[in-house]
Image (cartoon, rainbow, N blue to C red; front, side, top):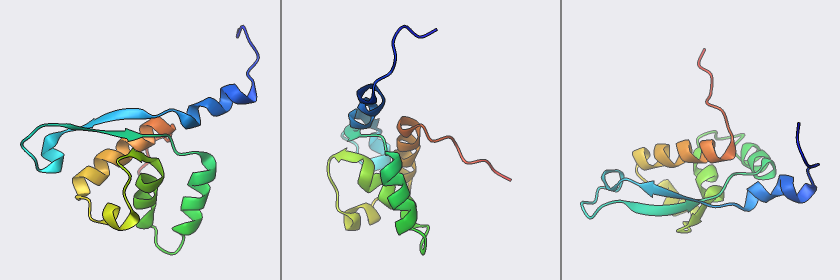
Length: 107
């Protein structure tokens, strides 16, 4: 049994946490080694806006998730569109993990 009652601040605190993620150099096509980016969890409000914005073009979902989650470095949507697919997949996997999104179920 829990010792304390949760407060609104307790529940909202996780939305402001940032995570340092090491991106392997091979995903960046660089021999100089790994780099670190900072990601934050996607909130339900941001997720709803992303889903609404992507209704006409669901290919925007991963791009908008990265735009919302990537704290450092900051990239424009146009820059995110130029990222290699392997890096996009890597970032999305980490964004899903830190945001508490479960894996999609295959049919």
